[in-house]
Amino acid sequence: MAKALENEADVRAAAINLLARREYSRAELWRKLSPRVEEAGLLERALDGLQEAGYQSDERFAEVFTRSRLGSGYGAMRVRQELRRKGIDSDLVEQALESQEDDSYAQALDACRRRFGEMPPDTPKEYARRMRFLVNRGFGFDEAKKAINTPAED
View 1: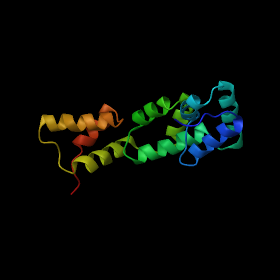
View 2: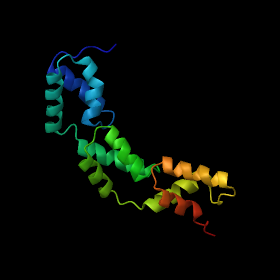
View 3: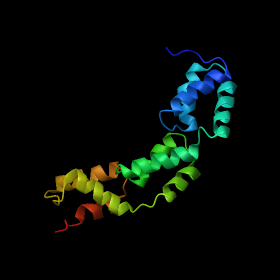
View 4: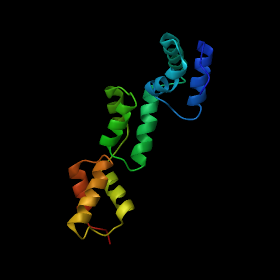
């Protein structure tokens, strides 16, 4: 088991150690560090200090996460859901999604082509499989349907 964090300096050092690897939301840091801290106020003060110093920012986390997920072929609905699960405020989620210039149809088409190639589905079962893939990736039904039905360019 990890060492208990007994003072604010220890909590701050543990949080900075996590943040050195990747961005974390405040809620994620809370979940990771709270089992190791007995006094909740101590953790709260340390996280407040990290935010004031600019080491941790939910806004920055949301932007980085959104850019990464959209670039990986996920749709806005999926990104929105994941950000909320990570404790990001709804306003910050919408702000992060708006800041990314995204054409959902083009992203759905790209994800579909990368996964299934240029050939159109030849059976209803294959069509349903592609539809499930795109919807699970966070694209709307209309975007998925349009992407699947778009003919391959010559």
